[in-house]
Image (tube, rainbow, N blue to C red; front, side):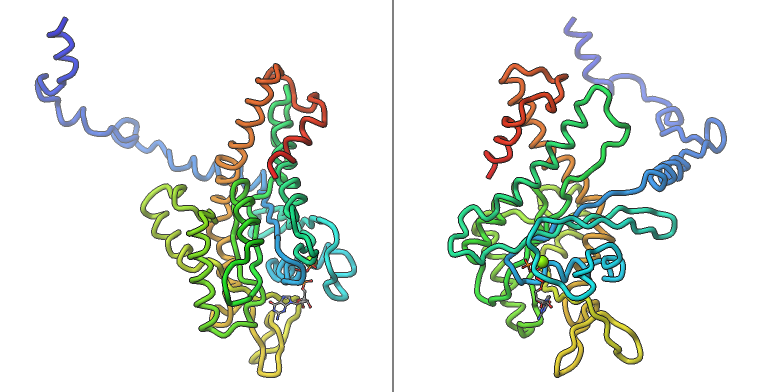
Amino acid sequence: MREAEKSMAEPQSKPDPDPKTEATVTGLDLFGYVGIESVLDQMRRKAVKTGFEFNIMVVGQSGLGKSTLVNTLFKSKVSRKSCSPSFEEGISKTVNLQSVSHVIEEKGVKMKLTVIDTPGFGDQINNLNCWEPIMKYINEQYEKYLKEEININRKRKIPDTRVHCCIYFVPPTGHCLRPLDLEFMKRLGKVVSVVPVIAKSDTLTLDERQRFKERIRQDLWTNGIKVYPQKEYDEDTEDRILNDKIREKIPFAVVGTDKEHQVNGKNVLGRKTKWGVIEVENVAHCEFANLRDLLIRSHLQDLKDVTHNIHYETYRVRRLNESNLNGIGLSTPLASVNGTAVRKESESNL
Ligand SMILES: Nc1nc2c(ncn2[C@@H]2O[C@H](COP(=O)(O)OP(=O)(O)OP(=O)(O)O)[C@@H](O)[C@H]2O)c(=O)[nH]1
Ligand SMILES: [Mg+2]
């Protein structure tokens, strides 16, 4: 018996295998060209047909330029198309949590982009629990998705309203993060990917901006606040190198506008001042372009993956454990759980 175990554990004791049979057998060797890589084309075609959904939320104190940045982010023209008329006249104070969706099509790829604009907080004397409506919204979207997912007759494609990224606006004080910012980001960071930005950064000099950014990074670190992209989710060295560069730049110092101005004969998005135009998409002027590239060009899929695999998964496990504890089977859709239990859950998270 021992001998048999030994021989199984030590395959090297067998005669040397024929190197030809040990080598990876490629499709080419066996049948000529198989065309495995065409699976990529198939996946691409499928993805293009299905389209993409991406949801961003903007959060921060009142008057920091959240609604303005929403318009800037999607080249304002795209954004303005389906906004309420008040956006045409100028951006007014946001009073309700509102989401605006646009289907953007580029080279045949369709993306339904939804931006959830939230009313600013912090203008009350008592800001206690001002994060409640935001946390509630985020958890409600997870709950909606979960209900669809555990339905017996579930849809082939579950509509995804989960918040994939939350842009948190830090006021350009130039000092440090306020207790309110710390508290808010600490709570948000546990349920959603948070990308902090310095709002209205045209009000800071370049030196002030740099020092403020370093201070914010330090404050986040000392308070154990996790912002996107998180180190522990880097999948390999390539990811780490790319994300380290982003982590060094975070928080992005952004400037927003919904107006275009002529600069050197070209129409550019910018803020006109007495001293010239601050070009919003010019990286020498501000880091709006870095933010846009992160969200749309380089990390869109990763943000969706982190939302699904980390944040939603945490929510799902907790909810299903809870259902089991309450004696409600997994197969029972949560829709049939009394509504108060669901509501209590989102509140208990606050
Ligand atoms: N200097 C400067 N002003 C800005 C910037 N972005 C927006 N503003 C101005 O700030 C004011 C408030 O902008 P909003 O976009 O309404 O701010 P908000 O965060 O949506 O405010 P609430 O809806 O009250 O939460 C407007 O007059 C904007 O023109 C910026 O980057 N720099
Ligand atoms: Mg607003």
